[in-house]
Length: 246
Image 1: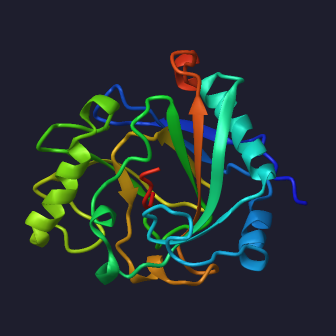
Image 2: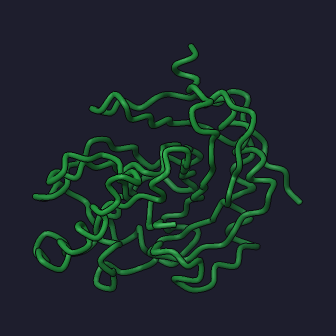
């Protein structure tokens, strides 16, 4: 089995967000042997059907071996300064759903959890012309993240999809009367982006090529979900189930 290798020359930066509370880290050249991960996707992965992973992800997925989780854990420990974390799962993900077939939850930004200790990562195995990941502000409540105490905003957002269809015609790619894009991280091959799971975010799917069912040309990523010990970590920059597409 292939062991994925953390690139010793990895570059880590903290992306600028208008809200100083928000922490988004961008890791370029994450794996030393990223091409082997791409080969796994092309030759060994079994993707199944849309919805097989029991999430709202608008595409097909396959769980990666634990060897990927191990290298992810190394970079997480470096960035957040913790040694005890749980990597819940890492899913090889290919967006395939046509905009005309989207459900309500797939037309708006989403959160993966409302828990402050839950984090997510997206690892791009593609680059331009595929879109990256956008982080949004929900304007009616001035929110950039959804916590347990305000999770009632989620059904409110879903209801607006039905009440204002002209504002929710497909994948969200621009600002609307309800959402303003606060931060964009572009897709780049072998780039890893890490962020709190309760940040409102979504994939930027503004090209038909980004929902092609072709591993070699489509929008291929790895979506990972992990947990940090609450109140027991600081980011490296400070030292020196709701899932759709990211």
